Length: 243
Image (cartoon, rainbow, N blue to C red; front, side, top):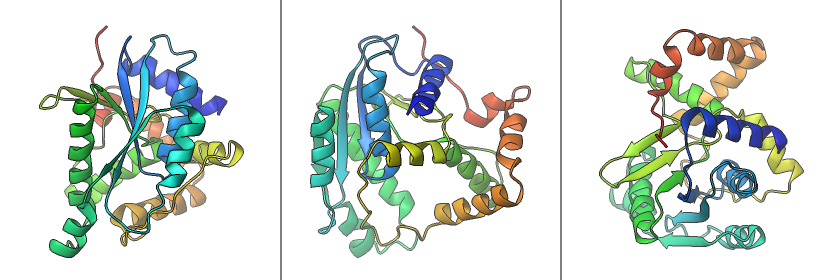
């Protein structure tokens, strides 16, 4: 946990993610990344240079076999308010639209529901559980499938909703998150989504894992290349919140 918290502190310092008095919501899916982030953000409250309020929001997609009780118990253990928003996203995506590539529409609808609920609860910062491996995978997906260099930003401003979106674990590797889950008994809920483990993103994750196994220094070299010159700003499309 110490390493993960160090990554969060560094990201907050570099990008100015959290300001005094912010009302932060962690977007919970029940997966390892968001559940570990919630634990880490709770601990970060104790030594963050800026005091902030913390809540959790989960968008229930309408799958009948999804166990939300695990998430409720986790939030109760951490003493973090939880809001579960019931939707019919699964029905729309898989039954009505019958999407062959459902992830894009699903993500768009979940984000919309998250943003709307945040406005209702007077929350102004959304924290998501993406980590460094996610950022690199997204970069290569963009290169392979879109012909451009692009990945998500550690910090972005949603002008239409007047919300900030942050990714506090941007400097953390997936193995750091896995270590926290194992050593701190972080509960994880299996996704009931039919597309789980069978998406382009999952395939890219497998490819990159094979690359790192064959070339152990590959991830380190990719990061060094990104950090040279102006590439960090181009890579992350960097913005920073002003105090």
